[in-house]
Image (tube, rainbow, N blue to C red):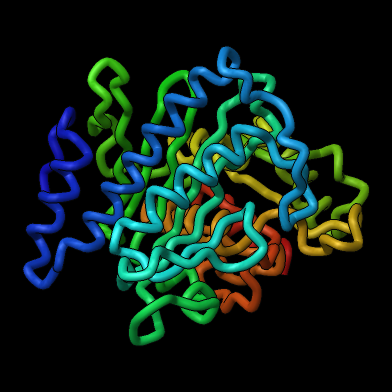
Length: 335
């Protein structure tokens, strides 16, 4: 399907729906509601320094992390917007201990997992942050959804994406038919198609990893990172390091320009033996995006992220994600 630059995201969603005569429009409606929530959060992010919502809220989330005021705003915005949209049966958020019920009488056939503001520790220093989301069809037959509906493989997602708040606000998402990128025009409050059919480079020259944790990595991970730093003219090495510390920002740069992002398991914190990244609303949606764009996503022992059966809402996984040939090489080296 030809995707002309400048088409609005709403028009794109409607046009895509027309290719599926069996579609009811519920997924389209759900995505439209997420778009509105993203616009609301974007406006608040852009005014954060003037609106006294920078800094900490004084609360701690289920991850044991201090909650930023803007984090709390984003979480509440998505919850309130989506609870009565009529397309969801249940939600889960990085900021909530348990599943989030929808309003009675508004139960739908999809689930939503989201990180309301990934990279929020960078809010006060004006580094790119973003909202990550994942959508599945429900498993249970009707009424309010449950934890069972949320705990599904990434392979079974029907949509995934993120909204990146930075020098411009971008929406990047997939429904299983390629990856599309839209940029928000704040003058009219509309997302326009700016990056159609995104394909990530097959091989890159960039590495994204927090080398401050090197001493805590498994030996094979240290060996692979050292390999990427060795001179190899044929493979364009040594690689250059590019690490922002905001997963969604690091991922977006690598998606567009090529790169491999690594957050392995480490021994730094005994309570987090598999690293800090969560499967349901960080690793799995980004894995769907990168596969749709021609890349790959695996754990540091070679398991495809999309094939992991989750056992907990806030399950953590090691993550290696990015350009296909780089991840292939990592897989061969680490196994």
